[in-house]
Image 1 (cartoon, rainbow, N blue to C red):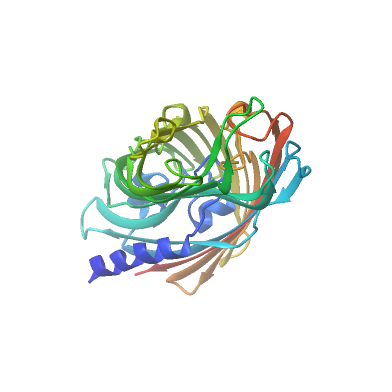
Image 2 (image 1 turned 60 degrees about the horizontal axis):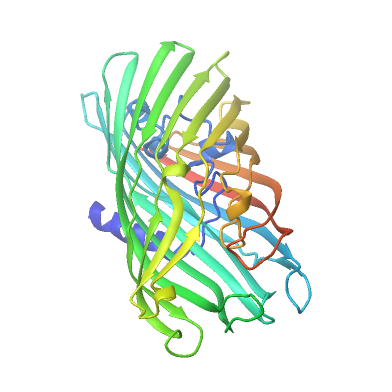
Length: 422
């Protein structure tokens, strides 16, 4: 019965999470209601089922069974600017919508043992952008659109080695899909030193990825915990897709397509949690994300007979990222806890490879949140997250936007989670 519930839930997650605009590269800055209120600072303090996606060792703090159901509502705001079109300059806002990302996590201690088992379903992240009616360098009006999604199931085991030391391993069984449109209704035969251009529409690309998250947690004293977490790289080889090119035969047409060079990165993080008093919690994390090994030159391969259409390269060359998160929680009463946090992750997208297709550039985030205890078994946690506006001016020589192009991005996210202890 539980297996069927989780299978249904993961389908539900993908139906709802149509686009994920993550802001530490392709990752969300935090996972969970408590964690989101503290800007993701959780590696040394995780103590609920969301630990499966933060620090699996934290599951050992669960006494019996806990179930978490949550949803995050992402509200991104994007803008693209350039001035290369003969039709005039672009100053275009992206299509702004609300994107729901649900989460389900369950953990249970094996009776009279030091073992806690868990399983969760998480919308891990992704990115996307939708710009309509852009004036192109080829004298047309057209669209750029991307939608990258990644979700995973995390069967997890945690063990209490000693009174001070615990460990945990979460397997990451992930699914990702990709859609992309790059001026899909535009064809330019070339001329005046400008090479030919065929608009493209990629759809139905998907991949399964496998990895693990390994965590340790150590209690230095009654008031200080530290955590260490390593997440392996999850290889993603996308296939079974279709690529349609705009233009006359033999260029134009719809072809089988696969994609490589785009995967989910490894990361290494450490965190600390300090309780100066019974009511106050302070936490801080630092995490290194190995984007440079995960996103390099993305290649879309088709079965087109035209040489230039067989391999379509997208040079991205993302840079490694260091993410710092600090947060605080204050228990103002027996039922109410207030939280605040700050998260910084340097933009991993180089200016020389930036485009409106993948504007994952936000760096600074501020969060506030609350936790409210409803009776003895139910907790309600909520948070608001603001990713501050980031503007990058660039010249990507492989994209038809010319020098002086600019991308801007900020976003707000609302998180709401319900925990049931039994």
